[in-house]
Length: 140
Image (tube, rainbow, N blue to C red):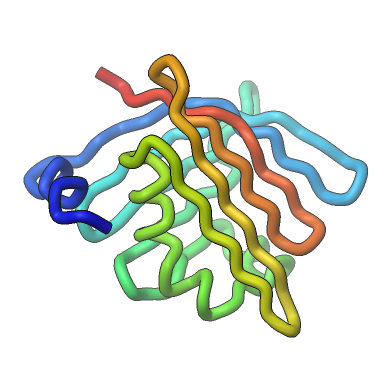
C-alpha cells in the first residue's frame, strides 16, 4: 500500500455504502453494505431491509477478523492469511483504481478484484464456494 493512500485516511474515517449479492453454491441473496474505513481498522455492516444488521465484521490491521453474531464464524473457517490481511486488502480495494489479490493454498482459494468506474467501486470476492459481489460508493 502506498503512503499516499494511508495518509488519506490518517486522521479520519471514510464511510461507504453499497449493495452486496451473496451467493453460496446456487443460492443468492442481496443485502445493503456499510463500511467505515480508518487507518487501522474497518467495520463492515451487512444489513437487509426489515431485518436490520445481519452481520458485522471488524477487521484490524494485522489481527484476526471479528465477526458477529459469532455463529457465522463457526460456519465459515477463515484462513489465517485472509484473517491477517483483510483490512489492508479492503483498504486497497476502496482506495485504488484497480486491485486484485489471488491466494490459492492446499485447503482454500481466495480471489478479490476491485475496479472503480464512475464513482463506484465494483468488487467481487470468491472464497471456496462463496461469491460476494456488488458495488460501493463513498459517502460525502
